[in-house]
Image 1 (cartoon, rainbow, N blue to C red):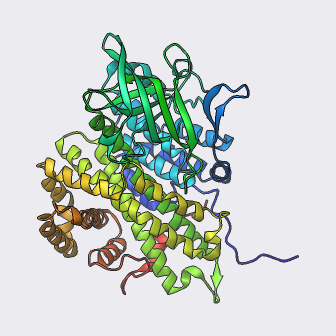
Image 2: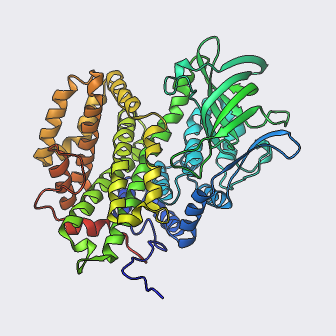
Image 3: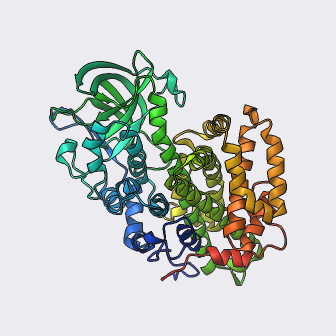
Length: 541
């Protein structure tokens, strides 16, 4: 029998929270110390071998569309593997879908962000309905009568997978459908139409006709949908069941055959006299539904940060055990450079994602301004860095990293969706420019955010000066990506200078503020790569 040797043990049966020094520190710093016991318990459950296996199973067993029952009756249902239901149940049990709204307190969005950051590392597919439900709450609260019907079920922590009217269920999940195949991100070109047919006090009901090119998680209990009225694009709540208890006409044409995010169903749908309820003002549908989008954009940054953390944890874990040329892989200087570079990128992403989540816990004009600018900016740059990051981490494992038995291949397929979903890179950069133009406080808020760090580190001060000079031409659409990248890098540098060990902050500033190729593994001489790698290494218990 051939003996297999020199292979690392699986990275499992460890605590995703307790083994992540960066996450642990950020949760306490950003006001969610009270959540640490619950986060530790969640981290242990997510890091268990059984839960990790659920994530793999959910991706190996993709959802299946059942358009008709055996008698030929149209049912438009989607069947998910039991592992999907188990993971979604875990997410809801721990409140990741609505806890900041159901139990508001200081640090509530930070605590949820930390939980979602860990969930994404194990399975990102269930994160989609969790995120959409979370983001839907402020939009639903615009209509008190709708909120009274739906929010108690959204706040429930008991996952109810049954396909039946929401009034008969213990909990509910919300999805959304915005884009159409002729327009994509240009939502004003949507052709789906809505015609009024009934009024009940302040509640107004419409019939929708048209289609959506993307409706994610189509087995949710209701969806926020954009359709045209005579006034313009308008937002509607479209439940899966009509008020009379019959199935609403949401015809699922097919499920998307996606690169990644395979455990989650994404669909193409048609509407034919579909029951819908007006949500917000007619003609103001895009601003109404974009409020939901701001929260899901935050989740894109959180999710990509979590996937980067898992990728570097897997890479370091492998390098700690694998021997090459009579040394552990981690002890080779060039590999230490690569791993340290990945570690500081992951730490910078995590710090910015948690700082941004903390801004959603704050009230006041400065906090609102900060998140209006920083949310699309962080989504752009963190999500844009993630695919290159995942590819580099995958390479640490060599051929094994490219094999589906190891989770880095799945991570590599997963990360592009966060850059595309809720607005691709160009849309994010244009949104940053619009936010800066509309908010008179924006420049001052950003300057206040970075002032202390710039005072402490001349490299950042010089970088900000160059960025300010470039900001004079920030209206130049062609340069938007460069400007937004520099803005995010400056924010990350500021956070690292203030909160990370000096070795991490120095390495980031030396490698990111002076230009460079953007590839990983090119940290300059003098960086303490071994200590940086040791800080990022997952600790097994």
